[in-house]
Structures are given as C-alpha cells and as structure tokens.
Image (tube, protein in one colour):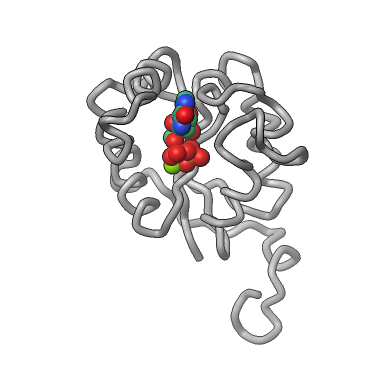
Length: 156
Ligand code: IDP
Ligand code: MG
C-alpha cells in the first residue's frame, strides 16, 4: 500500500470543487487517511516546492499556494501515487486530457487545482511536511473487500 500526499489548491477550494475532486479518488477505490484544511505559510511552501526554486514560475507558485486555504489529503491504496497522478492529469490545464481532474476543471497552467506526490520518496517527504504523528490514520473500510481481490491472500 502507498500513501500519497495531495493538496487541493486554493483555486479548487475557492471554486467549490473540493467535493467533486475528492469524489474522484473515492470512486476509484482509494482511501482518504488524512485531511486538513489549512493556510500554507511561505516557509512551508518553500520547503514543499524546494525542487522548483530558481524557476521562473516559482515566486508565483508560492504566492498562489499561500493566498487562500488549501485542503491537504493523505490518500492510500495499491499504487496510489501513480493512480492519483493519472487521475490528476498533465500539469497544464490547457493540455490535460479530458476525463482527468485538471483536464475537466481548469484551463490554466498555474491554477491547476491539485498537487500530487510524484514518487514514493516525495510522498514520504511531503507527508512529513503537512501531517504530524497520529494525523494519518490506519482504518479499514467495510467495502474494501469489494475494492481489492484478496482471494490469493494479498490484495490485488
Ligand atoms: P506537477 O504539479 O504536475 O507535478 P510541477 O512541474 O511539479 O507539476 O510544477 C509544480 C506546479 O508549479 C504546477 O502544478 C503548477 O501549479 C506550477 N507550474 C509548473 N510549471 C509552470 C509554468 O510553466 N508556468 C506556471 N506555473 C507552472
Ligand atoms: Mg510536481
């Protein structure tokens, strides 16, 4: 099981799209194991986006991400990191495929609704930035036996 870190960005919150975006992950069968509505500080945004420091869009990105509340989610499932990136779609709303979150809900290159970790290492690092001990929960859902085929002994 992987646990990825998603952020519904200020545009998603302000446009009233939180529920519809969360629904996409729930409908896929992924499990929400952490959730937090928060303002991100400039320091936290800089830590989160450290790999983008020095790029032309960096200052605008930090300004955007700190401009209004975001919804931070921890999302779990087999292959959750790649599944979430696929559900999100390509970075730019103008290029993202129809059927993806970015493809269906936005046209902007920077206001693209959602962040998702892009590797297991990034997921671990980013979860540590936004969630403290005990804030990401382990729990089972009654419906999980119909989400995964566990007849072999392990979920598939
Ligand atoms: P990702 O969010 O799909 O992983 P990254 O390349 O990691 O894309 O970029 C981080 C964020 O920075 C993007 O989601 C977007 O909000 C913003 N961004 C990336 N490239 C550009 C750009 O060329 N112009 C404006 N904003 C950009
Ligand atoms: Mg990225």
